[in-house]
Amino acid sequence: VLKNIISNNPSIQESILQYRYAVTGSPKEELELYVENSTDSSQVVASVFEGFNEHNKTKVTVPCITLTEIFQQHGFKHIDLLKIDCEGSEYDIIYNTDPAVIQAAKLIALEVHDIDSGKNNFESMNAYLRSLGYSTISQPINDFCFAVEATKN
Image (tube, rainbow, N blue to C red; front, side, top):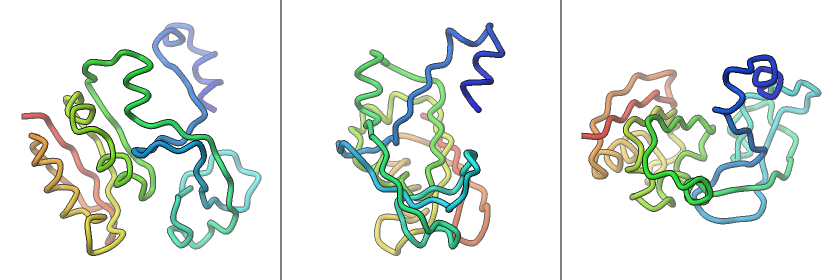
């Protein structure tokens, strides 16, 4: 779908790069995702957690790239917006990426899921982002998910 949007809009073709990787915080070659058993290519709830969505019964293996590798490959020094909506993998990405890479973002738009009572929950993520120098505002999406906007102070 994204490839079609880009090809049908010449004005954005030079501004958008598309890669077929799962983004991680810790380096790994592949990642197993649980997806819905469907021929629909617009899957929206793929997750590394088997029980994350009751319909995700199929396991697929996808290649990975770390957020740090993306920054290094493109020579990014700063970015205006870092948007992360990855159905539970936000913890691996944010916690296992060098804080300097995260802090290169002026604004972070993040969906945060309450996965456990340890570090993988809204309160812990919110505290971590604040420790990196961000002001945060949030809005509950449902009883276990929050939309977070983190703005660099």
